[in-house]
Image (cartoon, rainbow, N blue to C red):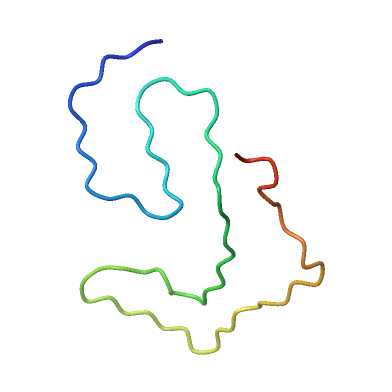
Length: 73
């Protein structure tokens, strides 16, 4: 369904950002990343207390193959 969009001010976009207004058929990324993080890594807030006494992050990837972006142009 078509949409009428007023003023849109974009201050900044990151390297692999997607800016979408209105109808769209397909949105495809141009980059990908793999993130390894331990327990409690992405917690945010004030007066946060995280107790991870015996935590470890498994970064072993035996196949070394992930989904690619071969046909995204």
